[in-house]
View 1 (cartoon, rainbow, N blue to C red):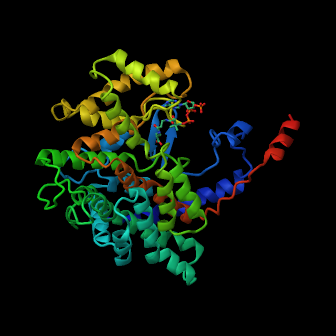
View 2: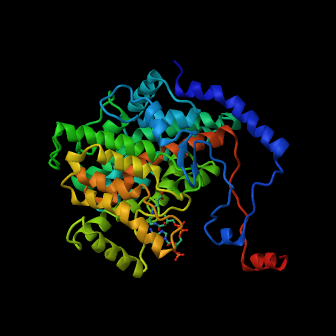
View 3: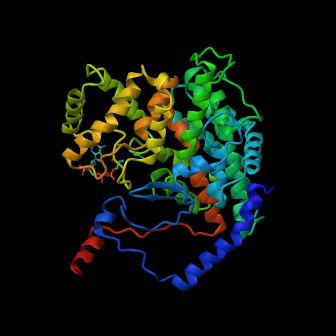
Length: 456
Ligand code: CMX
């Protein structure tokens, strides 16, 4: 059975031909107008990026190489490991090659990543251990990733002039796989920094999947010896691993224009190696309007619960929401820059909770999350500003992690960062395969914009 690299090699010639033809025959085709509103409005609606792995439909949401979340859940293998969700390893294969991997291919990629990720470079360990324990976990992640640039195969060979442009992708792939593989240990190290004075909370194993390692290193699986126990029984530990597989499987990518993906792509376009590129993406993911929203939602739900008499009190919930909106704050976890329907990733997370009614029946925060998804859209519609009044994925994800005992809110985005590596780094490999150039859009000043209005 083919390795990921071999499978990728098989599809490269045809894709390179397609790009050649698009450029030579259709290079002058107009993609769409760019309005002043778009220039001054976060480039909304401006179709100006190439991105292969995922696409976002305003009505139907995310598609992974044209497969919906539901189809991915049916078709992507989980290699027979306990659980009801596909492995993110199989999603990595799908995004990279465009094909659903076989059972064996998923298994071999799982093993390959587990072996690549068994050790962090000693200098990265040293840097992370030296950081203040109360430093923002995303800053720790960005620093850890940036420090790994010291071992970048791409950067080293590029500097030595050892590789031709056509082969840049090979070292980019090596670095990207090493980076993705290192995320369980990096994440575990950061979590132990912020919760356990830097002492490990669990063990890494070369024999389990990427998510089981993440969960183990967070101290969330059985048999751990840490002082920071969270008392999950074996069923809850297994559920938590499945939550991690679901979460990291569907957060991998959300087309190219979102801040973390776009940043990774932009920085990578300067031929910065994958470590530097993704470290920059992580900085963007840390923003409250992007990856940090899950944390805001948890705060919001806890605060709302302390202000209402019960999650059944619809009027009280409505009044609370109006108070928030009238004080010019946003309702976290609602709205989206592109989507115009409920986020199917939210639906998948909600289903995770609905499948386990006994587990969540007494969790007021999870109950409020569910109730809010019925009430908030009505209030936002009446408010009339948000183009999308529906829940986005952040509505549900943080509060589920919180339920199982991850209480350090700033840390949620690190888990998001594990997942998001998969999409943008896949695209970075493809950027190198297709020889995409450095990004350099033209900017306009007031005079430039005014000059355009004179032509109207
Ligand atoms: N609550 C209140 N007002 C909202 C709102 C919300 N949840 N979502 C949008 N609005 C407001 C906007 O602030 C904007 O108001 P102004 O015109 O006064 O600036 C107006 O509605 C129009 O905004 P929009 O075009 O519908 O949304 P944007 O593309 O500008 O922003 C987003 C999208 C996600 C930043 C916004 O909906 C928001 O702030 N939501 C809350 C934060 C959140 O949940 N972020 C997670 C995003 C998920 C992801 O990154 O994948």
